[in-house]
Image (cartoon, rainbow, N blue to C red; front, side):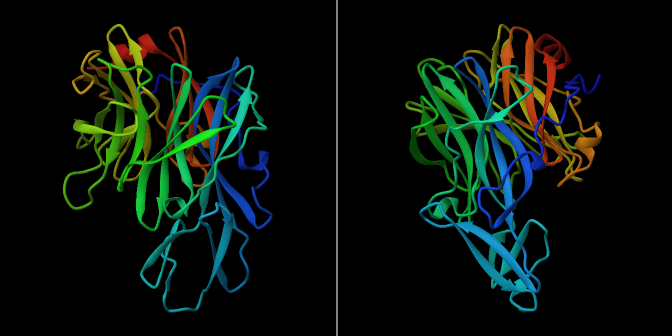
Length: 347
């Protein structure tokens, strides 16, 4: 049985029209998959907000963050032969790639988990040379009183994983890049195992290997090693081209349940699940044969980049798993699952 998601009838919960841009020179193009956490009795969403600069006739304007985290804009003449605007998302000028949008992370809070209000807590923006094209796709894990924020750092140097920590969502400690390019989709387990931190992550190799899911361990949550590949792409399946971790794995009596995204050759993104050994999470016990969720709703088909359901955040209340996800790379949505029902689909 495929697609066991129960979608919220009020989807989408958040759309670009619901927000104001971070800068008067910018326009919001997309809201994407949020990191999710519980804080002071509320559910928080750390939403990825993608923005582009306002365009002028005859010019292609590209935004970036300078080393102080302030937006600057580069203008390229559309007739310049050094410009290659071959892609709506990435352009090349004189051999250097630039993103047409940059992302930051904005915090929303809700009492009921459905109606979200933008928080007075600070937004997080790209800072420094390794985040000049912004920060994306944050996962939030809580261990004891500390929140660990793993996110994608994007720059001309490539795509890596950054880490920030906080206890109050006002004050953040920046730990820098913990997985170097090319790497993303990092989710830290919310419990130490045999005294060690564990994290899922996805290194990528376009020439050899593939976009597979890996696991690593750490003594302190910052320095990582003993990397092992735990799940690969599968020919003819929904995850034939790439796969990557969602949020922190969920501890069950059968093992660690990890929700993940999988995409095929047509870039159709679905959600699947896998089960890892409780004492040694590098051991794969079972995995989805079919997706537990696929793009079926209209808002999952049509948007900035259609046919996409993508998550990196959830909350667990008993057997109920509330997954907050990005639909069509434009909207923030909610779906409910039964953890027991997910486990029964794994083989």
